[in-house]
Image 1 (cartoon, one colour):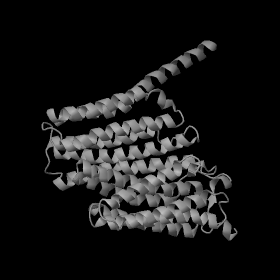
Image 2 (cartoon, rainbow, N blue to C red):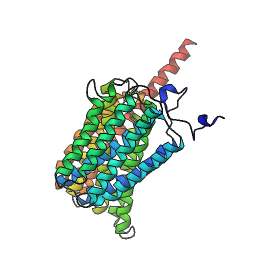
Image 3 (tube, rainbow, N blue to C red):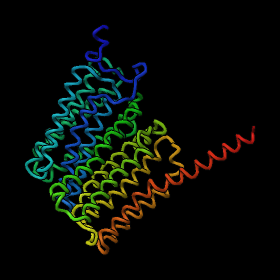
Image 4 (cartoon, one colour):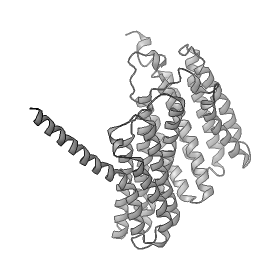
Length: 408
């Protein structure tokens, strides 16, 4: 095999230029995702320690920033099939920047900010260099790679400057940079989405979203288990243990309703606003999933008869409403599935309304009642579609069998 054809030394290639380019995620990308297990966990801890409006604002802002860093790197790997040694070293460098970002999160409001912002700036610079490299190697002959690399190089400077500004100007400039990333994608005529070759492998990106969703929702298990282990599994009452088990089932159902109805789903077309909706809906879905993981830790802090901790209830009810709304949003942007016949918008709206209503009831009822209402909002999202699907499809199968018998 000629050296240039071996994956270890083969130059990056745009997937449109590769014959039979597959959509499967490469192990390097999976390894890059692992650091986000730590980031999401530390972000959840930050929110648990700052359960107020200001704390939530910082949590949401940092989550969005980290998610965009992950997503932009994923887009590059979706556009360009890259497996060579230099690409691997660049990806390892991005992992290191994410490690520094993660370590900075517990002290993000004071001395940790400078480390986070500088690590984020380097992360953006590396993403820009990945695109620049394809342009320098002659892999991309259109303006796509040069436009994207220029944007990220400039934004890296903006994020680096924010590391040295006093409050609140540091947060303001950083937020402006985050908003600029999306504007540089979406602006009419000049946005990157206007480039004809800015078409990621949709199956690849769908798989990336699904894998990250597993990580984000799975953090709910981390929060539950660690909270119980810190209290002492042998010390808690049967009521708390029952709540703990309920929380574990809730985390499982959150994954179930995603994968049955939208997981690995490709957008129904490649129109700009369809792709943008699909992208943003996944952002909000994963933000909601982290909120739910934090809220479920409250299950280990209360028995059956005391009211559920109000701050945890606020995060949990808002998180579930946002999760279901985002699920419906994604469902409207992807190709239609058989399951969509039974997971109708009305079912999603029922769950959203009940989740919101539960928050107003929680302070006045025992946690057992609050869990029952919140659990109904969640479990209805799988129980009703599965029951309807079984009944309808069984009846259709029976009618088809009877028709076949009559035809003979």
